[in-house]
Length: 299
Image (cartoon, rainbow, N blue to C red; front, side, top):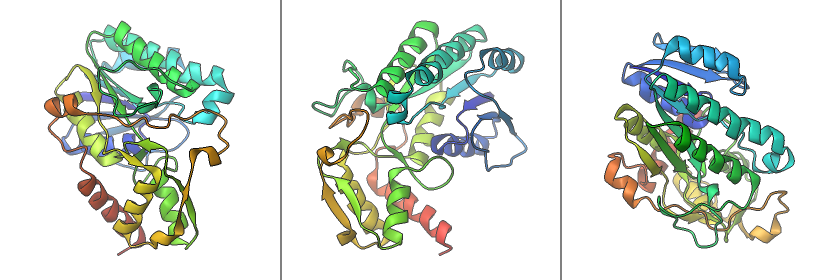
């Protein structure tokens, strides 16, 4: 099976590449801003801007992948609010173009979406709840979902939340915590914003299952509901850092440009019936994070 992955140098993209190559699939990894720090005889790395419709269309027609994982996005929440044109072009128009091409070559299309499609007024959103984003990033990701559903007959929309882990990709909350706590610096963590922190490796396992078995529909692949503060304490306990360095803070203390949902945590009961991996296990996620950290520091 031939598989194309956009955003292959991101945290979830890199972890997915590893899983796909372990399965001996032929993989085309698309990256742009950052290189893919991985070499394998079955991996071809192509630097390409996902907003370049013509080149992407030519690539997909030439390669005719069996599965397309679309993980690339403009994920800077405040940046999307400030630069709406870039956000729309990257998160909506590029997704629509890719979905159209996937249908043309009969590829199964897997689109990585976000908990930020919900307003965050109550939390524990199910796969069937109606999205209502409160910022432009969430709106563009929702419109990406709409584009996929309207253009593809074979697709999976995978919503996730607060992806974390060590390795390639932009800084996530776990990386931030390890950097600060490792230097004995204090960290402010919110006690009143809730998400469903998801380790990149567990997300990749679920994406693999969904893509290689062509599982259609909307999926919530996410960890257990936690406040930012609860997550920070869990990381500190797992890695042996001083928990007293973590200070309670409120969402009102942060002067973000874009509004954040207060509780965008995800329910995943329906997804658990269809996906066999334990993507929701906090214990396993923390164990993997510990292994990543120990490799990083050479333990």
